[in-house]
Every structure is written in structure tokens, then in C-alpha cells.
Image (cartoon, rainbow, N blue to C red; front, side, top):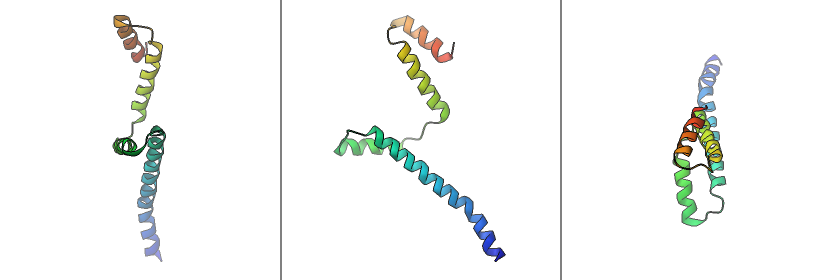
Length: 94
């Protein structure tokens, strides 16, 4: 009985890791499906293959992308050196 309990305790982290990995993959599949809405046939198949093979962005990378989107939206009416200076300042957080 003790041996069986010991084996069960040792296998728990493996079972948890497997369940977590499936959940992450399922989440990725859901996100890719949302992005692929409207695509059909070979175009969708190629997109899904590409999307599912990409590594997931870390929180820091996602934060940087969000900051870039925000700065781009604010700089839409600026051009040339003014835009470049604004983007530099915005992305640095000044």
C-alpha cells in the first residue's frame, strides 16, 4: 500500500504537466481559430500551420506589442522626423 501511494505521488507532477500542456495547446488552437475566421481551404490550412507552430509571446513581449500599438495609434497624424521622435519618446515611456 505504501509503495502504491509513493508511486502515485511521484506520478502526480507528470499528470499535472501533461494536463497543463494540453490546456496551453487548446488555448493556442482557440486563438488561432479566432484569427483564421473568414479563411477557407488551403489559405486557412497554411495559416493554422504557421500560427500553431509559432512560440507563444511572453508577457513582456505582449506588453511591448501593446505599447507599440498604442504609440502607433497616437502617432497616426505625424510624419518623418516628428513621428520618429514621438515614437522613440512614447516607446521609452517619456
